[in-house]
Length: 406
Image (tube, rainbow, N blue to C red; front, side, top):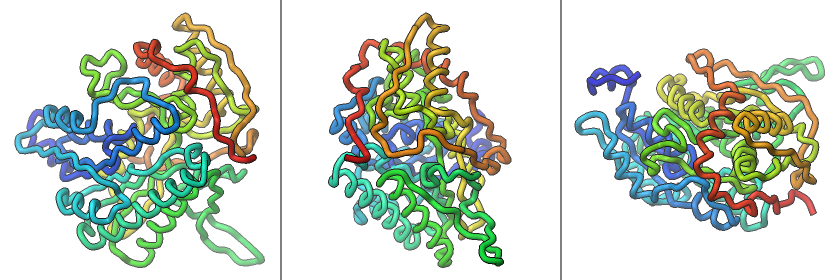
């Protein structure tokens, strides 16, 4: 809730010093906008790797995006209280000296760690991309843990994980990372098995294990590990979509096979008159959420931390949908706009179950008042938001070229 009184807002929202690692990314930039609107002093940290990776695979953002330093200036113009500070810094999370300088400058109360290579397909392209994905992700989180222990042990770390850590186990996925089991006459509460589907997902598994170990060993650090489903769309409260008067506020919208999440690809395929490319049978089921819901959830979790010195694992999604049902939902929404598209089934380049049981618990966020947008409503809005950029879409970018197996 915003207020005209800066002091009241700070007291109500607990606004303090927030550090966003990965501030230039798809999620990082709208999160910075939200934090500024809530009265936080906002420190961003990025090395421009997302831009480099997307270019490397032949992709590009469908939306025009301001450069990193222009974004800092845009944030500074949107501060809501006297003395509110915005500072963007340049550096790599997996460089301990650059990260140290960032933490010393920011002295954060809360850290949002979004600065990782986020693509399963990118991690499976080559030995180089697999190694880069794991080294950058795992080393970056490890440096962050040690530097937090030294420099800001009271900060709350909100770390972006992925529901993909759990894989598709064929049983309900608990929230919290543990489940009760009986084996050979004995009962125990054990970590829920992780069945990562790519080298990227494995890097996230290592992150979770390292964070939980730091909590278990009594480092005194406070963690929220967010197991998030795929995110779609470009609309948040601060970014009203394609009709936004200030295009510099827009976040990126990728649609290549590596960095374009499935709904983002389907919507842009529909707008460009291309068939929606479903991999295999299309029974792959996951939990999805809109961009606005992702940003709102992360802020809720940041402002309601777990007990000091503990690790809280949160499942973050709204709806369960199969890929084929997603494609059908996009087709239905497109028809209402006078756009007729077809669904095409491609040979699946990935190694994954195409028909499977999928159910996961989600209790922590609803208990905080978080609900989220129903997916059909979100897709209809997304089509409207992205329509102004349809003419600039390059159909050649959609084709998958990365294969999990020879």
